[in-house]
Image (cartoon, rainbow, N blue to C red; front, side, top):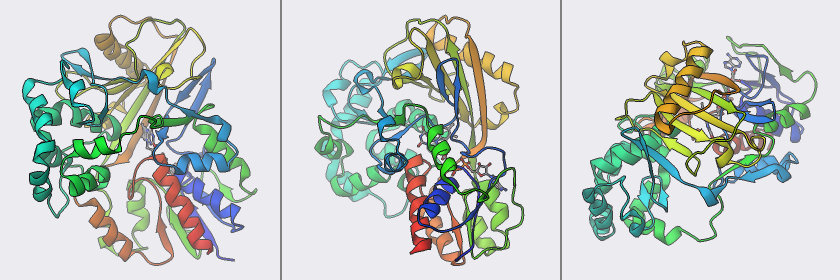
Length: 435
Ligand SMILES: Cc1cc2nc3c(=O)[nH]c(=O)nc-3n(C[C@H](O)[C@H](O)[C@H](O)COP(=O)(O)OP(=O)(O)OC[C@H]3O[C@@H](n4cnc5c(N)ncnc54)[C@H](O)[C@@H]3O)c2cc1C
């Protein structure tokens, strides 16, 4: 039997371990902390289900739901409440609704833009003109990677970039549209441009009336994925509180730690050039959940995004009980504030009380008066979201070519940050190693 060492017990390392075990292959999993799951962490308190990290996954990508079913959690799969789906964007401290039918910054229904205060006549005209510019846009598509900002500017101009695309990306990746790679972060839009020129035309041909809800989660919280896999692992195969500094003797090494730790671990295993190819930057996140014992009025929808131009330290907020059913006891409310991006790392050094107070104050400024929360939770995730900068995919191809055949990289620094991508790659690697 091969000896396999897995370093890092987040969703990537743990899924790989679980899959190896399913295939009858022994392994040793080393996790630095006393807890498995990494960024995936669910807290249950006073009837509230509070996601301290990811709160669901994009339904369109099937791999997380497949894993849940394989773990016997099919009954727990819970779609987001899309009937009431509205995403709000803050402008001058006020909430403005994104028009119906928007997919990221691309509208599928041009009529829905009429009357939207989010866009000027100029931005609406840029949207309306895009389908007719299809040939020009297709011809102008560069052969090389480019920033998301350059891509959006070519299609819709500055206003759409700043008012919609930048806050959406910041709210998801804590990222900067001028640095992020469009090919790594928005591959589907790049493909649509290549085929159709116009993104609006491409999306209109895809949108189905019966499209499934946009996000999926587990009724009891995503932590159940972690608990189920952990419970299935054989005794003695997992070393907890075991931070690895030098690589254990094994036939195969699977590195599944965050990118900044990989940087150290990879030295000595691969040429220095491989280390240089890893994402140079990662943004930090702080999540503050505020639980309220009383129900109060909130705008419909999942929550809101905050553009850079606003004088706010928030990137986004989620109206948790409106996004997913069953997270909050009846008659109560749960709000989740997401801080990060350029300010993220500095905020991680504030204490819990200061962060909870900051979250409450920022939410009040945008939503109006709020009751005093029954309790709050604070979770810091320093350097948790690697930034896929322009040229990322080429660098990953080069990196793969430099790794010795017994060294494998899993986790969110390479081929996607979302849970489905990480689960897909982790299971595929386990199958490859046992085939
Ligand atoms: C705030 C936030 C919200 C998110 N929301 C979503 C979402 O809604 N949907 C979605 O799909 N994705 C979301 N993501 C992305 C997704 O959650 C992460 O990309 C994913 O969980 C990362 O998993 P991982 O296994 O690669 O790394 P991690 O979860 O970081 O796990 C790495 C593990 O390695 C361990 N480790 C570190 N150093 C060592 C060492 N030296 N030796 C041994 N072990 C070590 C760590 O302790 C950790 O347990 C979100 C991310 C963040 C930060």
